[in-house]
Image (cartoon, rainbow, N blue to C red):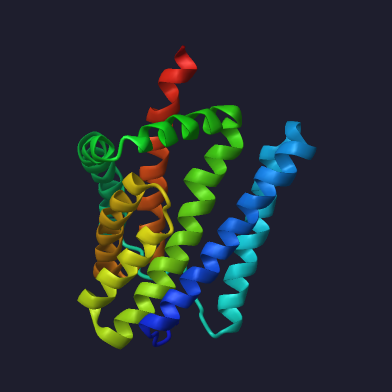
Length: 221
């Protein structure tokens, strides 16, 4: 996979850098695209996001990181990936998230704001939520962070640390708890199959199921 040894401090530093990338293209979307080009803001944000995340991956590549997206692909791994997508939806969206939402009522307001944002630009939101974000997050968090920490500290410690760092990327408290649990499963899948593509499929599939079930009732109305 081309993983390099990685210390916790460096993993945290790279996570902060990626968080900065996220904040940058989000800032552009909120302050520039939506105000200056409201009719095409969704596409401009998508393009900006792609440029930013590709730049981030290129920065990792220059630091010596390589990823083989087609490594260790097996029928079993693909089936596990699809199964994880369904499991995430059943476990998180239908069981744990309602519990977390009851503990953090303000998250319900954030949830409604998210729905409105998705409905405003369904195509570009679909691209960002179900393709762009899962791909970059799996390459970075599982391939780079988890893979590098595993070589330094072993699988169990690397799984916990990388999952915690992944959770930090999600600002909503409900999303933070859900992201940590999701990362445990995705990280376990990666440690078991050593396939970035399987993790990407699992992540994309889960986000797609959540996306469709989130906005479909509102579209029908």
